[in-house]
Length: 624
Image (tube, rainbow, N blue to C red):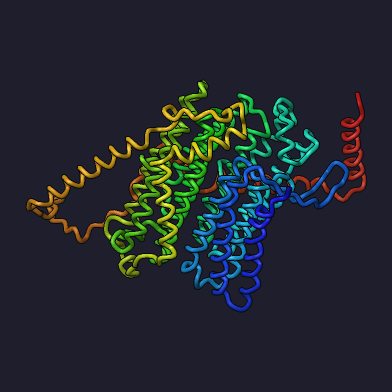
């Protein structure tokens, strides 16, 4: 029986986006209200999806032999809890964009593309047919390209790079889907799961796994298919980065990866190790690049890449606590990373810059932005009792449970990456909110961001606290049932998760942390009672006036650039020597020039190539 709610969850934002696109011809600012109402109604509809677990909708479209093409949707184990969060991020970004995009000349297009991306993301989450899934997946990619191009220079250049990289990964995904169809004879996900064949036991199965894996990690933004995210951050409007690379793309990519490793394929030990290594390299490589960035948007973009590594690492372990940790971190990362990008957007909106060198002292002028940004920064750094620590702790436990020879190295990489993340955000908080204001900040005379921008940041900060202090609730109520349905052998239905092993005791730890904070505040107040002697600083025989001193946070970790090995790696990375986009362009151009050289214009040469090609085809087709 068809459930119309599933179709409405896609049709509503798609129709609202069409209205925004048409209305923009007459009045662009009316589209802001239309976009907000459309996102709010979509959120209300999507909140009903978890109650429809197992519900389906099918509309036959085309049948060619054994190939059937249909709009097929089903509320599965992951989509049940993920779809409401997809819609929530859409609503928060629509609210935040009201003042941020108010004066943008393409405001109508912005809301249209945003709502269409929301419709595509919901469709991809609910899809039960691989072709329908691929269409929705491509809609999100196309909307990302169009939204990036609405930004400032070099928006066109980075938009093209984003589309090329994701297009290449999506082509790999399409080829993997074709191989999967060849092995199973169907494109229905629910039927493929019921077949439960060990598809990685063959060469074709391994190839299909790697191709779909490449498409998933490219969308999520893992190394080496990550470079589109830092590039997009340079030109795209900040709400676009918060909506797509920080939240929707992570949810889509990691949910697909979860289905790949838990449902569609049987993971071998070698493939599991490959997935974990990709995760560990992503954690360390991206966070090292983030530490030396001077632009806040690029710094946050590299952290968005780094956090994907924890999700990939957790899913690669194949252990129940690691898989739960990876999925929990997927959700947590979308929350605090969106909050951090929105914080950066608020700072840029009020100061006109995102260069760390030109900021500082904003805590008094923008207290709400400072407080919410600090909470999200502590969450991404893995500081208890916030949500980032809870999910990272589970990933650590999953790595240890693998008992692999490389487990200690992978664990060190994950923990060290978290420490470097904390160090990086010490730099961010100091550069933005603490210290002395720069001359640019003094001239801008910033004030707190408007209420429609503050509210989404406050909601995300509260979720960081709630999902940390009460981490057992989302894990037990949402994630554990989802994993039980995805892979009953990994976590049999009805079996509770071993919380004392994989999940820290958040309640007791939170009480102790609050007691410690209260004692520290009490000691601080006691210290303020007495009179402190104030003296001017004496440096090198001269009195140093504090009014002349300003220590920018950009110099905190510049020394790492001078280290023998890391220094050269940083220089190569900044010159994009490891960027697959530029590497592909360089070697692709060499291949094209080589092929051009073979085209001599002589008929005999062309006939020779045709004969050689025909011989190769015959050798492949004819039995020996």
